[in-house]
Image (cartoon, helix red, strand yellow):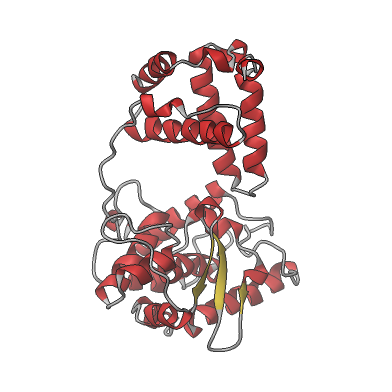
Length: 317
C-alpha cells in the first residue's frame, strides 16, 4: 500500500479514464471527466501530486478555491467526477476508502420542467417548419421537421439525436421503434407512431435524392453537405426553426432543444401517462422525487406514446 501511495495521481487519472472509455460513454462525458479531474488536480499541485498527498484537508482546500469562481452545478459535477475516480481506486484496491465524504457537495435546486409555452406552440412549430422557406439558402424541411419531431414525439436529447444511426429506426409496421444510446451509456427503446415513422421515411427519401443511399451504420441526421450533423449545427438548426415559426419568445431561456424534450414529457403526463412510463421513455435511471425505478412493458410504453397528442399533428404535414 505504501508503494501505491507514491503513485502519481495524474497517471492514476489516465488509468481511470481508460477504464471509463471501455464502457463506451459519449465523447462529452469523457471530456467532462478529464476537465474536472484536471482542474482540481492543478489546484492540488499538478502532475507532481502523489496519492499520499491527497489528504481530506488538501482536497477541501482545492474544492473551496475551485468553487469561489464557479456555479454550484459546476462544483457538483467536479465533485461527482472525483468521487467516481476515488471509487475506481477503491475498487482496484489502490485505496482502502473514498476520501470525498470529507468534502461537502453543493446542494442543487430541483430542476423544474421547461416545456414550450403556449397550448398550440408544438403544432405551430411543426406546421411552419414543414413548409419550404425560400428565404433559406438551401431549404430542407424534411430534415428540419424530423429533428423537431424526434424531440417532441420521442423525447430525445441533443446527444442522443447526434448518436442516431439509420439502422436505429427499425421494427415491423405498427411496432416501429428507435433504439437510443442514452445518457450514461444506458440504452433504451422508444416506440414511434406511424406519423413519425412516415416523416422519417420522407426525410430519408429526400436524403437519397441529395446524397444517394445511406447504409444502416451511417448517421441518421446529416447537414446540408451530407456530413454528420454536429452539436453546434443541431443547436443552430433548432434555434432557426423557432425563429422561422415565430415562437422564439415561447422558448424558456437556456432550454432550446431541451424544451422540446420537456414538452414531450409534460404532454405525456397531461394525457394520462404515469410517472414510471415517463421515466422509462425519457431514459432516466431512477425516479428520485417519489418512487423507485419501475419496469414497464413495451405495450405500456407504446400506449403512452400513442396518447401524446403531438403525434396527431404530424398527420397533416
